[in-house]
Image (cartoon, rainbow, N blue to C red; front, top):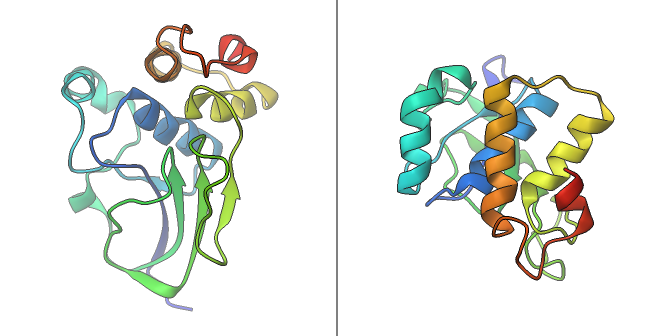
Length: 164
């Protein structure tokens, strides 16, 4: 096994708050994985990060170390721009609330449940672990749920979104 390996968390381009909050939630749950920002983010997300980026563990894609990517965790999506270093042996996991009947490539692991926001799935795990969030972490996670559930008013909103 190569010594210069790493594991990453990725999300979709044109990142909204649910995707960014999912990136944070996964980074808190899986601290050995590097959360990598996409190149393109929605304006409101870019403006939020301009104020608070230094309070999060996010890496710009160009900051990703060289080497082989052993594991990719995709959040709020089933596809993303993949960094250099992906090999046939790279393991893929997905945490996504979209299209429960959609499939992933053979060999990939999928965690998908019917909730209004992907962030909800990660917040539930953080709550189970009694993870103590900073105020800015809690704010970002709340923004993720707020945006994808239309302030908890969209038809796809569940009691789990409200509780999270």
